[in-house]
Length: 329
Length: 121
Image 1 (cartoon, rainbow over the protein chains, first blue to last red):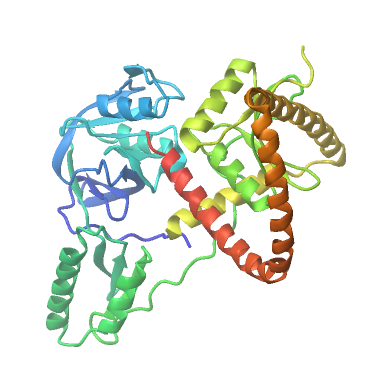
Image 2: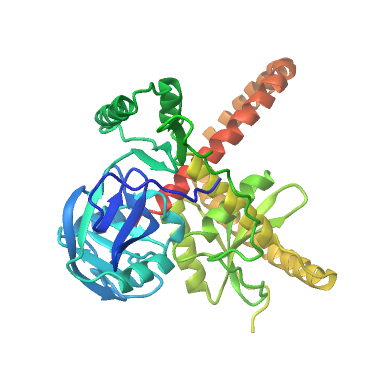
């Protein structure tokens, strides 16, 4: 199920607001007398290097930014056998992607990515990642000095057409008790104002399920609420946007044998994971009589193949075997 | 968790689509290419295994006598072990089926964890 509605965070509706719990960025822009809201999915910081909450602003912007590798990240990569240079220039190996908005909190950015599959994951070192197509739109539409507010609100309440909705996401351990208390306090206020009792069992179910989509929990005035919107069935598109391209096989190319497994699903899973690396490594499954091989490539030369094998080892702990060309040009 | 499983499922569909639809002629061509690349993969694996075997053989040669004696003892132990295991085999087949299902689930979780780790900067 894909959500088509999102409850806005409980914050002033100004500039950029990021809700870490829901992994969404909201951009508010005044258009005459109206307030326009755009929203984008994001990738956020890991537990070890979380994205900070608080008020800041866009200090500067850059197209095709250079990534100046922080010492701590360089050290982490060095331990894995991956010696990063001090600076990574723009290009497919640059994790910042094509656009960056540098925040006033030093070291933190809103930027694109060379790993689109990481959006929706806690995978960054504290920065906020957007899909390449989203960061371009945001970049073009966000002046320097735009205020940025980062919050962590796993429980959101909103109302539409007389119906009260709760959007619950999995909270972090640190925030859970406090956020639950805030939620119940708001709901008790609403209950008091409506002079009717909430179905608290429904509220607790919605909170525990944490489906991440707005769930109707209450009619604000009896009989006034329209029925909650039903899910819309969307047809599967013929072409998937951003789908990794797999080049045709070439007998004169090099390859890397990444896995040889008995289970077809396991082979397909491994191939999919390799295909979605950033930058992508093309990989496909070769069925054999009693097993399935995952072959990465084609690569232009031995050096490229060895580089890919090294990436597979460092990033995925896969011991690839380099395969020479079938025929030489 | 649900979001990650949905993501992995979507990527599986992607991988399945990548295996592709094609005309008969294209399919035959691709299959022929796969066969040739597979043969090269076999050769690369054999070379890697040969290198490993040569390294192992060098170590074994250095202490051949004790290895032979050890091998003989091991062989006897193995024969005894094999006899005992044949008795256990029937009961373990049932246990294996349940284990297989558990392993498939663990593999999926492990793959998800590896993928999430690979998405870090």
